[in-house]
Image (cartoon, rainbow, N blue to C red):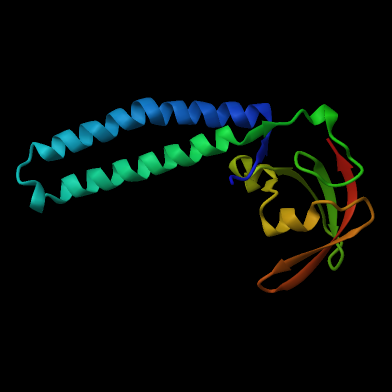
Length: 157
């Protein structure tokens, strides 16, 4: 059974646009590359043909994964979220217990995660550690260098 993916309307639309592009232009480009390689002669010893076929297979796998993600997507309206605990699409302000440094992250689906924009996936170790925590609770995040502790300072939409 596939896992449900919670997304914003913006994230859903972006994924759908990317998928449509891959299904049209991506497939056309893959077919063109295969046709060009086929014209170069004997297919049994044609590395270009093999590479083009591999690229086509990778493209189809990506299309399949994106189709599944969209099929299992549930679009959330941030105005309906409960901010008493950390959930997907919440902004959470946390403070490192050891250093006192504060930072705010938005918890999003895996397909919308972008650390540069301070959007972290709910499937990441960090996201998993924060989910379900309330203001004032300590989230323990397991890392290769040991556990990190963060206090939940604020939860907002």
